[in-house]
Amino acid sequence: MEKVLLIIPAYNEEDNILNTYNSIINYNKKSKVKYDVIVINDCSTDCTSEICHKNKIPVIDLIHNLGIGGAVQTGYKYAKENDYDIAVQFDGDGQHDIRYVKDIITPVIKNEADMVIGSRFITNIDTFKSTFARRIGIKVISVFMKFATGKKIYDTTSGFRACNKKIIEDFSLSYPNEYPEPITTAELLKKKYTIKEIPVEMKEREAGTSSIKTWKNIYYMLNVTIALLMIKIRRYKKCQ
Image 1 (cartoon, rainbow, N blue to C red):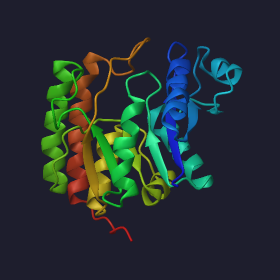
Image 2: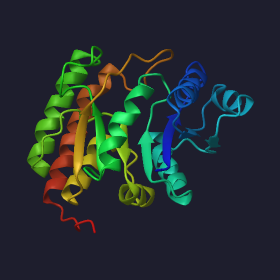
Image 3: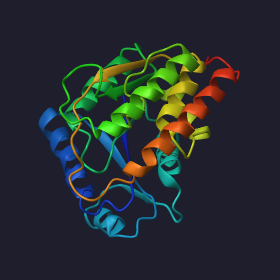
């Protein structure tokens, strides 16, 4: 049976992290599966770390704030060092539904894909699709993604992703700190990895405030599209 790790980056998630962890543990018991967990506490200034230690939640406490990219890469390094077959990025804010982990890891297990993205936009299964401005931004990035790689990706910013051992190795060595989801997806496609999207339902965060503010949407979109144009002209070595 494949060893599966859920990587949960967390910054100031004191109101959400215990509920998120308990949802995983309860699902494991109910469904008779074993999804391991590692929380990457990105130098939170609230009680995220204390809650993890008090409730015996597996956690790595970063001594400096590395941002989402650095936190996620730490999780991939942990996955590599502990010989996991599949790593799943899973939000600590309650937006990702543990029931869909089975759906996104199945194509990886069957060798149908190297990475699977949990997508809000390929069917109408999801009722929560974030703000209108963000949806427009995602569509624009999707257009540039296809231009850069030749493949259409609908949910370009989804952080709900499952990766095989080859990508765990790749991400443990190199992972961007800014705009990690669209950038890494485009780079993997250029390296000829196989990526598949699976429909999932996401929820609004249970508590707290998202790190992505409305005023950042245009800035984010412009920077990502420029990065995608650079990826288009850059040469990449094919994966083995």
